[in-house]
Amino acid sequence: MIVKIEESWQKALQPEFEKQYFRDLIAFVKQEYASQQIFPPGKQIFHAFEECPFDKVEVVILGQDPYHGPGQANGLAFSVNEGIRTPPSLRNIFKEIKDDLGKEIPASGNLERWAEQGVLLLNATLTVRANTAGSHQNKGWETFTDAVIKKLSDGKKNLVFMLWGAYAQKKGVIIDDTKHLVLKAAHPSPFAADKGFFGTHHFSKANAYLKAHGKKEIDW
Image 1: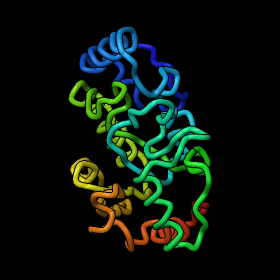
Image 2: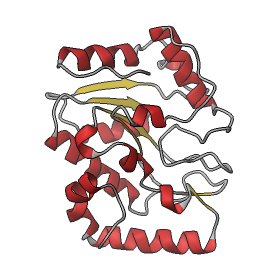
Image 3: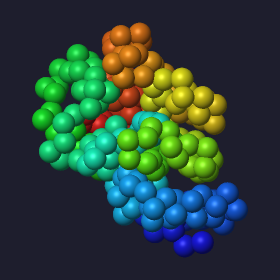
């Protein structure tokens, strides 16, 4: 199967594209786009991969579903389009960055600037129905994103994985923590941020790890 995805990812993930589960997934997704309002726009399903090629990945931040409100999702986990109000979870991420690194909270919630520096903003499920959280779970996306995480874990070294919340941490079993830094915390949502997200200093820890391994720090 030919999938329109960034070239280095095409090479890394081609075996997945040939599997039956992925063919079934794509058939389901095409039908959903034809009959429902689905986010993100079809051309942005693999936006995270386009903005952060396989060989450029240094940090992985794992989300769950794309945002399901109008105009929000842009294919990057936790990110929103320019001009869209910053959602609560992302606002809390920015608050933690300010407390951790002293950076002012930006006006824009578009995180392309992170992706361009090597931060893969990966949702476990890459599509969702409008106003229906979790509507595309258990259709095959999770199997695909597990394969992405495993490919990164096996094929690279000294990456930083940020796993926020129980859902992301379950996927962490795929990661070889003997050659990567795995940072775990509560989810940054308003329901959980006070229970172990704030004060974790993940962003300074990530930069210290990257610097220690001769890599460029992320300008968060």
